Length: 110
Length: 113
Image 1 (cartoon, rainbow over the protein chains, first blue to last red):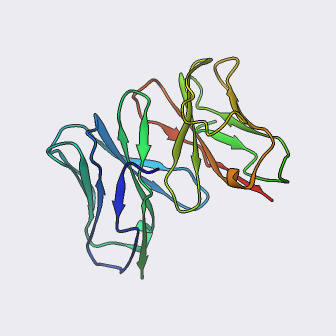
Image 2 (cartoon, rainbow over the protein chains, first blue to last red; image 1 turned 180 degrees about the horizontal axis):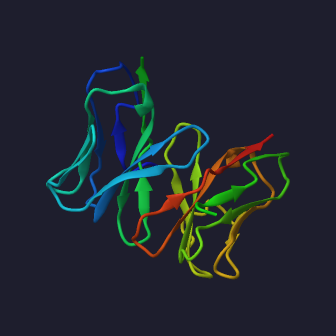
Image 3 (cartoon, rainbow over the protein chains, first blue to last red; image 1 turned 135 degrees about the vertical axis):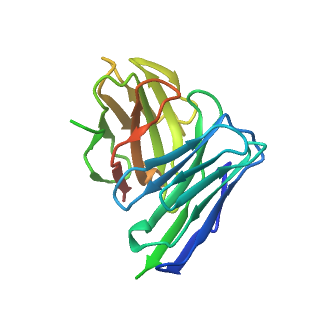
């Protein structure tokens, strides 16, 4: 059972468009991480957010952690085909208990 | 090696067979995690080691699943009497400590026929 709900489940857009994907839970996390996973590979960490309300930017990607530390969003500006992949959020409950969402599968068409 | 490696990358087993999946973590990483990722889902926690000690095995779905890390480095996940519902990608991750960044291996795709 996924305790983190990610939406949308699938997203297909044209190159150059902007998009936002969401990660929601009823639980409070000590930190939340976003990963990107490509077919046949393991997830690769993009960012960790720790403080409620925190915003982090990674080139064209903007990550926000909700004030109550229960939800997060990932915004991509001017998406490129190289952004295609499965975006996973994961919340850390305690030191070793990390729970993943089911992911948003993004396809960016050239 | 530079990253976490797993072997085999693909495994096909007949229902009822035993399988063993290997994980080589990044050298020096104290913590090691196993996850199960079903098709279309995110990874689900199975078990966690700190050095050779298995500190949390609450995610193991049944007593057919067993993991070990006898020397605090390489780990093996063993599944006995495999069932079709065991078909999934099994991911291994390691970290310097907890709650540091976890680095994932490429996974082993297990298909049980």
